[in-house]
Structures are given as C-alpha cells and as structure tokens.
Length: 111
Length: 153
Image (cartoon, rainbow over all chains, first blue to last red; front, side, top):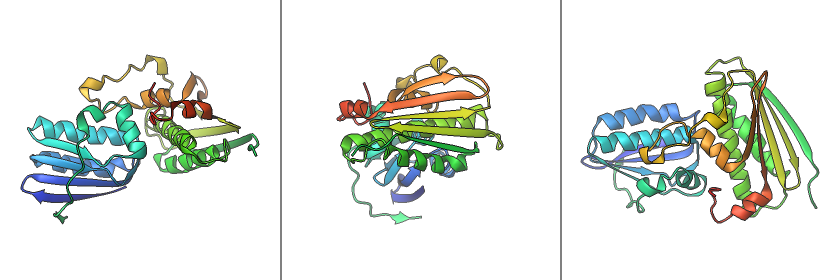
C-alpha cells in the first residue's frame, strides 16, 4: 500500500491510496490520518481508484478520517472505488454516505 | 475437464506478516475449484479471499492478541465447485453468534470482520484446543449472487 497526499487548494486535500489497505498496511496510513485530521481541512478527497483490496481495518481507518473531518466541520468525499473495495463499501452500507462523484483531475503539488 | 479434489495444509506463526502468504494460497486454491475464469468465479475468489483475510486478522489480533508465537493451521479442501477452509488456533475462543450486527447508521470503525465473513461464506466455529473456524462456499452460490458482487442477500 502506498498513499499520496496532495494539496488541491487552500484547505482542500486529496489523499490517494493505492494497492492493498489491510491490517498489515493500515498502521502507516493511520499516522497520516491523524496528521490530516488535526489540520482541520475544509475538504478531503479520498481517491481510491488504485486501491485493489481493502479489509475491515482499512475501511475502519477511512471511516475514522471521514468522521473526524466531518466532526470538525469539514467535508469528505470518497471516489474511484471499484471491484473488491467497492463491494466491501456496499456491503458495509458506506456507499450511502461516503461515495461521491468522480474527482476532477488533480492539478496539485504532491508532498 | 473438472479439477480433482485437493487438500492443502499450511502451518505458521500467527503474525500479520504471514497474511499475504495465506491469502495467496487461498487464491491459488480457488483455481482448483474451477478452471474457468468468468465473472462468477472472480467474485467467488474475491469473496473467499476477503473472508479468509478477515478470519486470519481475527486469529492474530483477537485470539492471540498480538502474541507472536501462536500457531495457526490452515487446511484447504477443494472439490469441483466448492471450497472449505479450516483455521485452527490455540488462543482465546469467541462466540461468533454473540457478535452483534454492526450498527451501520453510526458508521462503525471496528467490529465489522465477523459480519463480512458471515455474509460472504458459510461458517462454523468450534471453540477448544484448538479453536476451529470452518469457512465454506460453493461456486454456485457466487454464480447465483452474481450481479450483487458483494454477496449481499
């Protein structure tokens, strides 16, 4: 699993997660989620178009980010889900609240 | 030509670093269930691998609670159109029937694994020394569910 954090514009962050997000790899992402959540972004766009597999611990990390950003008054949109990750989000009824439209093409500086 | 029934046994320490090895073995075993590779088979393999991944997480994180030296035995039996996977551990037991359904409206961050396993595969659990979790699934069930990829009833 790898992830990239990009600043789209002031207060708008895009988090792209690739590969397999599971109990083995999620601790790395948790650190970034903590950092992102404490920065109180206006909007976080989570791009999962290159996420191949996810398990319940990976979903838990994404839900955690969603709840923390929303709890601080921000907005979160999840985009690009397909295949197994999409099936898991649907199974866990998350598609009702977390899946947005396709994201615009990024024009940001990755860091 | 239908594949022959097969029996695969793996034994390892219950560590998360072995998760990938387990899931690759299970994915490979799914090829012994049916040689064809259509949408129903792809769903079958994905559902089996997803469920076993959750089951292995549970053994490592809950039965053994991070003890590095706990043994896990995995026995995979395949026959045409069917797979059965037994996970045996010598850690703490649990009652899968006592695990409450997730409260989806509260957007739970944990407690989802057993729900995923039960939704995707038939399960039996016998606590003891060892605890035995048996997961089984027929390819026909995936074929029937195809179109709702996630196996949701």
